[in-house]
Amino acid sequence: MPLLKVCGLTKKFYGITAVNNVSFAVNTGEIVGLIGPNGSGKTTLFNCITRMLIADQGRVLFNGEDISNFKPAQIAQKGLARSFHFIRVFIDLTVRENILVAAQHHQQDNDLEQIFRTKNSRLLDQEILIKADKIINFIGLQGLTNEKAGNLSYGQRKLLSFSMAIIFHPKLVLLDEPAAAVNPTMIKRIGEYIRTLNQQGITFIIVEHNMEFIMGLADRIIALDQGSIIADGLPRDVQHDYRVQEAYFGV
Image 1: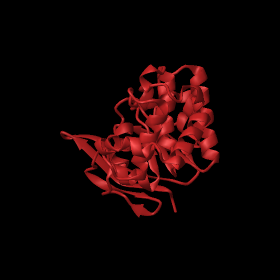
Image 2 (image 1 turned 90 degrees about the horizontal axis):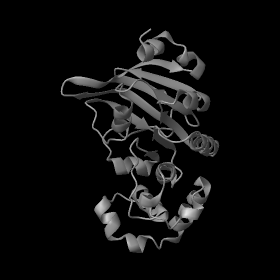
Image 3 (image 1 turned 120 degrees about the vertical axis):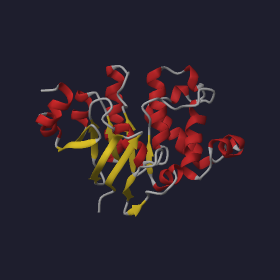
Image 4 (image 1 turned 120 degrees about the horizontal axis):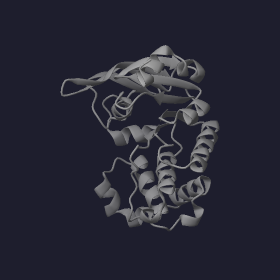
């Protein structure tokens, strides 16, 4: 049984089809790259899977359960986490506090206002504190535990955002351009973290424009163009697929 099964997802905006009858499955333990030119529907597909957007048609099954009508928080609690292309951290909170807020989001169906209203009591939860510090150490931010996120570099914020997605060791993580706008050293670190977590049992789907990074990291590549899947297979095969070449280069 696939860990994730996407069945005929379609999403339109004002008559323009952003995601067009997309179907695919992801097995436990895979690292799947999701590529395509700008505007091909990658982030919209992520948003439909996680119900940040409501698809016009289609279904999503996660671990055998239909989650098509779940709220985003319920989906996170099932073990499907995601990060965003635009970094979402709370700049006035410390590194540790950001991770604790993310942990609370994964634990209970609370909106952000409720999380902050009872933040002080929840920060005392020892189990979550231990998990947070382990994640901070794993990601290499242990020297910045009590630093406000607003004082971090862009690359450090990217690592923090990544940490917030993996705090409760989800079954599947959707990463949106983890290698974007960071230096080669940071890109290498992010790749190493993903491989380590994958070896520990986390499955990944990664939207990425950095072809060298994703082709070297993923077991499998799915290519989108104009909202439709145009290729799905091994990285070397997809990279040389004429439909992918045409989508990127018009040749």
